[in-house]
Length: 566
Image (tube, rainbow, N blue to C red; front, side, top):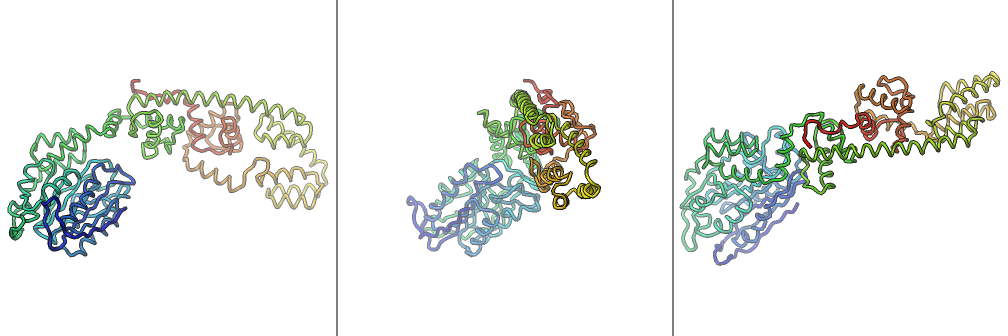
């Protein structure tokens, strides 16, 4: 945000601008760079008026790309100037309207609603009230440029009905047209604003427009007193306003043409034509209309999100709702394809995503198959190295390396047998201490057992369990497990999806146990085996990447969009 105050001595521009005995005051509010909306193209044309205005004798206050507080501070400076001679306010940026007021939006607004817009913008009614301090010598210019912005409940795009205070002239149009009008008409001494406005189709005027009162009086001629009783430009009727507001709400070329058919020379006719032209020539608007015409179902949107996710474009969920995450993923995909980046899809692009995702899914499956074969070879080789479980230490070494390996069930069964044999050989006191440690199943409990029985029959089991509980041998701490659980819970998987995942694990021969949608120890082991075979993070808990891979492999080729021609 740039905040500037220019106070220069009065001068003469090209021999036409008047020499002022005392400075007038101009406020330029130029917001053309927005954090959460499309930037404006023409805003700087107004900011470049600084030199012309200062040469005409104005103190110029400029606020560039300001938030709501910055805009209000700029208006406050104008109010503090207590200007009664001549006031000019130019406001450029995104505007929002309600039934009762309009607002110039600050550069940092993010989907403002009627409840929050006052904090994120500057009220037009307040702006007009401040401008009324110089009746007959007060001009407010509204630079309107149709660019995309998301608004919340209770607000529409643009400026609503304008009720100019007595003696205030309001001009509305594109920033370029306003800047040209200012230098070529408004600042020229003796110009008849009424006649000039009747000859331009680029601007609309409201409020005080008198053929007998120039904004700057003719040189060396005493200016007549402002005729603030001059009736304002005729306001549109209620029927016309209602039709215009309906057209703004729909914001389509057809809606604006309906207005023009009824009111070809209406108060909003030029804006309707401009909006129609902008929409028909705006590539993003055209892309949005193309996607809307497809009338995608929620299932089809989910298929698109699944395809983008398989292609490594994060949609932030597969819920069938195209929010900011999905739009960002679409733009990323379009950028990689070297096509127009709009964030919206047409039928051909959807089918391309489907085809690419199907190819990538097959590649992932083949990569997983090869990785699984390599892992199984290493698993079997290590089982041979450890003597195929001939010794208890060999069994433990194997489980340390492959806790979910091919022979893990066999190794655990043999260790159970060894433990039962050790129990049978242990003395009653040793066995009782071990039972207490196993009952508590904590690191301190096993440590106490080892302190009391450093050579006890269960010392290997105690040390192995300590390693597991403290994260040794590939285990996780309690805090890590809690994080994994929280991440899986955030997916909010319904029981039917959990059952589908178990069915897929069972079909892959990973032995998840009973398919009931409940993830028990056997399910966790199967998930770990799946994650390891696919090169994913091996935790035993699901994240979005694991779910996308599992479901993609489950549904196979359904990712192709049904009902859309290739």
